[in-house]
Length: 138
Image 1: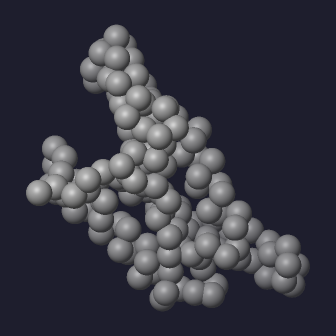
Image 2 (image 1 turned 180 degrees about the vertical axis):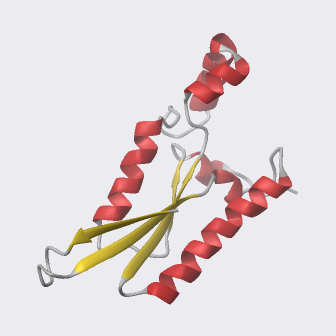
């Protein structure tokens, strides 16, 4: 969690608005994956975001971001450059926007939440639309 303070543009110039942004994961929204503990902890971050948004309003806005697969050095170092590139390409083809997130995409989502004074208690999924394609597991 990180807390950001900035001067209010629309209110008194002496008033500071605090915002908080947490990082969750797409795992918070899915009942599958490699780690139950990870998914539950990330779902907890989403629920904590909602609870804190209510408890701290109106002085503090609280939001979270849930990235899906993110193209990163960590991913490449874990699987190797070729395997990572192949997996990223295959995954991208399964998303409505035909690409996967970059660290910059996730950072821009956080900045958007921090800059908008009307958003609080929300979790923004950054996964190229993949989350809307998931089917219920039967």
